[in-house]
Length: 160
Image 1 (tube, rainbow, N blue to C red):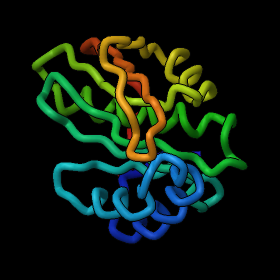
Image 2: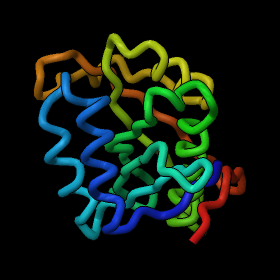
Image 3: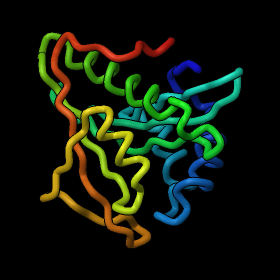
């Protein structure tokens, strides 16, 4: 498996995967491919055997803060390390953007009932922000999580 930067050619994959994994939360099948085309939104694609198996989308709010907008992996590829690889790629990109600014952080929201995703985030060092709970457009409660990224601690590098 490897991670690369997303491109316009990936939007159909993002739409199809969003329809499979995010349908119960809202119209992400429509909104995420549109977001992927915005210049302030960065997309990473994870591939295995030359096939796209997942994506992550994020924004960099300031050099000291980023927001993970979405992370998704094909159901048949979940629990094989693709999600962690995507998180590592996002964190490495955020650290690169912070550069000499030093410490930075990544914030995300996860469905309250998505225990496997919460466990992945916990294993990767994310902590709960109980004061920042919210709701998805479909009405499901979400939990905010956050991770501080210290300078000099790098994750996986994303292939150009």
